[in-house]
Image (cartoon, rainbow, N blue to C red; front, side, top):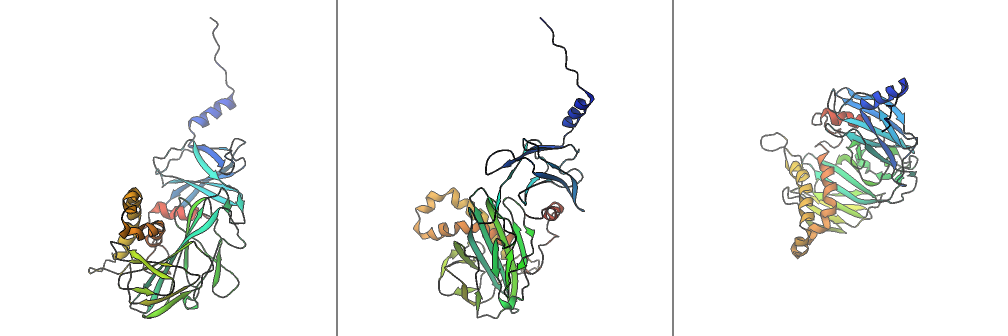
Length: 369
């Protein structure tokens, strides 16, 4: 039998194999609209640390959509999670690699950008109103976008969200956005051209995206809360903490969250005009003054309630007395997001002391969602 002589590799070939053997991260960027590999997409690798994200280099994907970083880095070794950013058609698409996550064969989907909504729509809009005894009203708004298409709605000139604040808020606000599967990050809105109106440049990618506004205004109970809505959502919900009652045209009480006793209302719009009676805060300090009020209970239990209901939907379908829960279940997850990532002071930044170092540097690294 004829023996096959072993192949002799050139020095370049040996060097390539050495890189392959020590390659830290490799993967492929795929166009989610076509299902094909995306050539020419710029991929950047970050090592997150307590001092901020460390840029380890950028490369472009080849004709097969593949990328390869040969740096000897690992998530959790010398820093926090690794972060990959793929830029395509003016939008960043992020992939976080926590410790223990495979670093070979990493897939990053990207999508074409369009200036029209395409398959994106504003599915839900929430208001959490907290009139305090000191004469202020703390307001948290949550916008939830659902994009069922295969394009990203990206319109930097006109914005993807337009909103208006009451004049009493003095245009002071905090805006945090969350891309599908991502963490909340700070985003600054731009003036829309009319008093107290703003636009937000935030790409709405396929999947679920969220926007959170927090602001405050002087308010005395009993009083009337009014807000002009520029963005029209399919569903509008208003939440009142214990001790606060809402009344108004187009306002319907859906039920009460079991743990926090917060009342959840539906609102038909087109604008908000609610008679507010009483005072109450979700983040009110407890008797020991440690600040662990009912807000924690509400934010933690809404996602649990959602999972419980979806797992037992057939049971609840047969119980007419709790049909309101089925109506509000779509809003529970987004409301949990709204309350979980906010502090008692609505115009302050998300608490950096409670966030892990990994969370802080990821926020800094992700510039355009």
